[in-house]
Length: 403
Ligand SMILES: *Cc1c(COP(=O)(O)O)cnc(C)c1O
Image (spheres, rainbow, N blue to C red):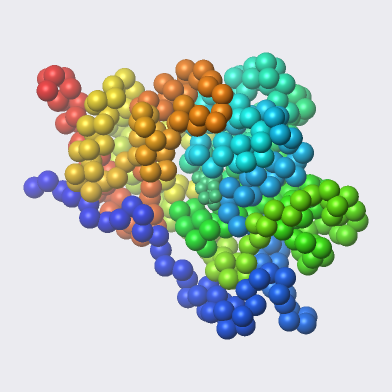
């Protein structure tokens, strides 16, 4: 009998009851806007910022409307000017080059390795050839490269580092929380990330002047003194006049949904990794399939898994994706010629000048990606791994026979 998986790859867990209760309380109060407070009240948005700053060990935190807004605000607060070049790894999702374009800057893509992390030699070369002064590092699919080596390179070259932590909320490198290696870390609380408020974003930083600029940019008006996880009033002396108000605030309703979820992050990470390890174990010894090795210093959160099929051509990969789909297993292919769903590759971001990225192209050509929502049971994960392993084997046999 051919096994089939019938679960949904896009079904997240429900919002926890205490988060629902907190959200209902905000709605009953009518005070959803973060600056609409009763005397003596600490609004949920400000409390969320304090909670997340504590969780990451950052001095400051700012909650905003989305992860993409967090990135664009961070770039602008870091001083990126229109026309300036901004480095970013070429394996990422569209909101990252999108945020660079949103501030009028020009993306410079950097190669990624087979471990799906930024290629430091290529980074060094592109810094030298472009003179770019800022790296927006996308920790795509939660793969965290050698952050110590990256930091050293950025410091030596005078390059400012901002981390896109959309897939690394709750992750660590060598014990240090992701998002804490450069000027700022940007997180997303959109439904498919590690905490779910529908839409939302968070920025963490230790830098007073940066955070003052980011806060005014986020749409604080002159209420920046209502950011207890932000810098003191002196930090705003210039920002209050110089930064435009770009209205990308987070509201109290979303913040109320998020605060109880922050307390669950460590538990969720453990449950995600259990699922990740089961699928990884089921795929590890499949001939023709390469799992992605992980560095022992990488405290990752396995909310999705990637694997490669080195040497396969496009037709064979498209066939495998279709066979798995027919058995209920949804794989995304980062090498597909046309952008589809949430995947796209650098050639389709035509607002950026075309760039040569042979190594990345080679990696992405055979790279497959699968979500692992927490609604999957451990048995679901075993079944999914069996289906993929079986289809890879028969797809290989078919290829050998030339059918
Ligand atoms: C989701 C995502 C973002 C942007 O987050 P939104 O909250 O959806 O704007 C940025 N980078 C990566 C890698 C993402 O997956």
